[in-house]
Image (cartoon, rainbow over all chains, first blue to last red):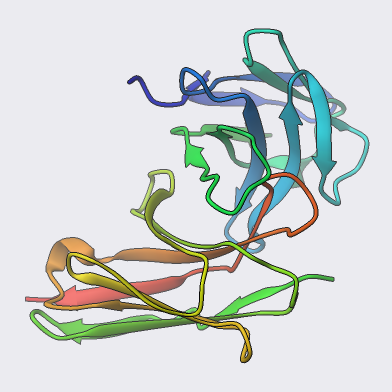
Length: 115
Length: 112
């Protein structure tokens, strides 16, 4: 089975711009979660999508948004970029049932640099 | 605020030794616990998952869970230089889908 894929792998933007990141989950997985990883804060949960609906949301401002398509692919968008948004953005997919054993598998990440 | 705490390290062990990594969590309702390994510049990869009190072994890795003490640990036996990485403890947000809260990770260095 192919793993989680994320595009693009690297992005350079300037402050005030917006950016869209894409994630394709493992085949058969219906849940996609997004995380931001920075050296200072570590891995922080952004949001989770399941069956095209946002099921859970972390503590990030409204500039961060996402969506999921009927084929389970997901996109996240960051508007009005700030320097502090520079980070590795990771997507993780799972089957999505809310049971004990559901496990998340991570994609390679998108490295976003905001200048 | 639900939290997961790890000693940031670095934890240095010689090749062949046992490395012990520890993690505590704040939410008593948490049910699922995971250890991920992250090499520098790479994404996290799953090593172990554990759901019930006690030990779970997989090859050189043993995860231990004590829900009463809200404590999870990972033991790596016969440590190898290739085990040098950051180890992330993650806990399921009990009432919220499959979202995970991560600790900030412990950096392990295994010297040959």
